[in-house]
Length: 197
Image 1 (cartoon, one colour):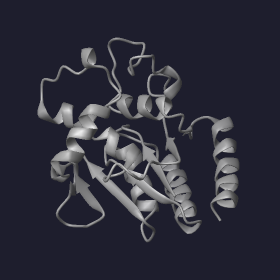
Image 2: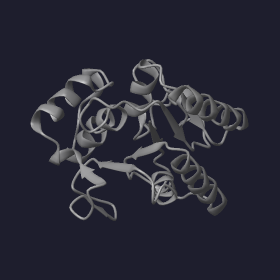
Image 3: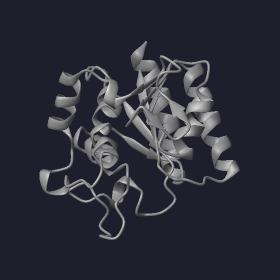
């Protein structure tokens, strides 16, 4: 069962990194598989915590941050996915055409890769839930409006397309900065483990 660990925060407190890594480790040992995008320290903490378990990183482009898609079969890049998968991702991208005006290939890839992050590299293995770490209201799924961006026009979260698609597909998103969500993720995991067996 796949889950998405996502968050584009660049600087994460050490205690939060440890929390995320511990959670990812626990989920791996419980049979959950991680999918992430390598976008920031939240993704990094999930990735390192899930080491030894089944995990997949789908990068927006081949050489992204410190990750290299050619080094490991666990790390793939959107630009290496088959053309039919990329075309399907573009068609399924959660953001409406009016929001899809790009000034760079990277920005377009950052949005388009959200579909395989949620649906899987083959578009046939959707995540069952997502976990994020978003301390500010501009990053949380609750702040994403009907067109998939923050209500604050100055700030557009890099994960808006993923959050919007998750919301559209009614896939639960848990924010580790919210104590209620932490309790809900524990309950959801326990329930999912019982129904998956």
